[in-house]
Length: 335
Image (cartoon, rainbow, N blue to C red):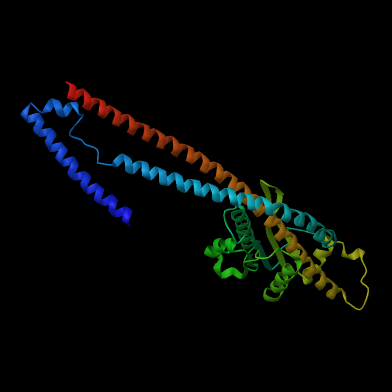
């Protein structure tokens, strides 16, 4: 506030100063005798505001300081993401062997349609990680529109994991969101946490087919949007699921019926797929954030270089102008 008041006071003084200087210049031209002296000092009818160059240099210095602070923040975020990436990547690679036997046993058929489809969208709770959230949201919308093309008998609901996916999908499909789960990465992702999420989905939602949309980690700079298809126990017992999977090659032992076995398999499959999908998505998030912060750091460096060049040019021009004024004044006094 004090700086703003001082700046406003400086502009008022500059206005009065420029009016007096312009008036003196015009009087010198009319009298004839004083015109040479004023012209020798470089006075014209258009006078720059007093202290304008100094204010401009101060603004550039403030801008340079803010860009340097932003560059430090982005560099720190890049280092933090790089340190977390390796840990989560190892866990994601180890979790792939957990759900792959279910794919061989129960099959994975994206073309299977059910009367009640549940789209589970895995997103992040934090931003500044590129376009991974926009990608999974786009795929979720495509699945919704694809199911709507089959007619009125097909119902589709959303289950959203992550705050960023919720913020985007609730604008258009607020009434179709069954539940949403956030703050899943406050602690390290583990199988117990994913089993609780799977249990919540099974208890609160009715479904025939589940579509899990997530980003599969490929490398530190790339990820692959993936859709995993899971069937309910009723769908697993149907003829269509028997054609896809390989359940007929196995025998059921013990007192449990085939329906109970399928129920347990479906629940464990959902927890296993969620565990792998959340780890893959978290790894993709760290890789995307590391890449985004690296680009931001480079961009901040380029902006800082341009501002430094502009500041040095303005400062050099100010020094040159002052030297010219001193030399011109000395020459005018000698003449």
